[in-house]
Image (cartoon, rainbow, N blue to C red; front, top):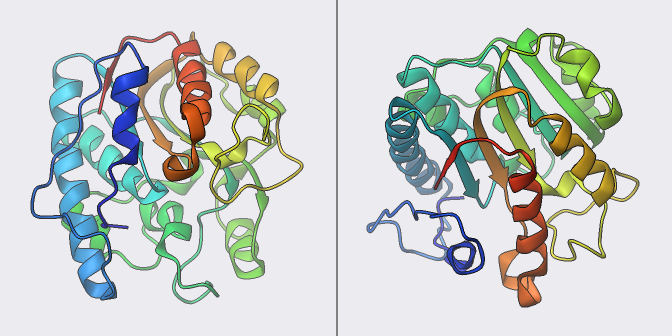
Length: 259
């Protein structure tokens, strides 16, 4: 949410891949009480992220972004668009819908809005400042979205977004060569043993083995970018959740670049 956290930097110490930290020196505050300032900071960070994604794509890499929240997807998609590589499909894995607007949300948490923002609904300030053009709803697959608030549920039902269970994803990706932007919010997994530091954990979801099978099945797909909404790094004792998450990413087996 535009506030400085450095816990995810530990990924560089535990993974063999060459992760790079997106440095924004002027954004070092750990608390931002002003909501407008948060929006401005987030937009700045995601604009810089979009430029980095564009650079990686132009160098023929498949970029992978690990960030603290799902709103960072706006920067990733903007970068793909700037590189002339808008994906034909977005596959969005999340226990939640992320389809709120200010009119439907009860918590006023902007982290519950990015998928709606991405398609042109609700608050578009970050979208516009990051340089993102709204994405077509009918090209999005949301799995599994098992924890929806009433207003959000109605909005999704009245949208063109496809919703499905994890086990049915392949049915909604009919073409093997279709270009896919793959977003994974780690809270979609219900695996407290393997991943004990998940944020916003929701029961009755896919197991770790279910996710491993899914990631392996996606290894032959035309994935053009990957983003991860991460675990609770401050609570990740011995980096157990980070290690499990990285192992799933590596199951995708694609030529990736990391930031």
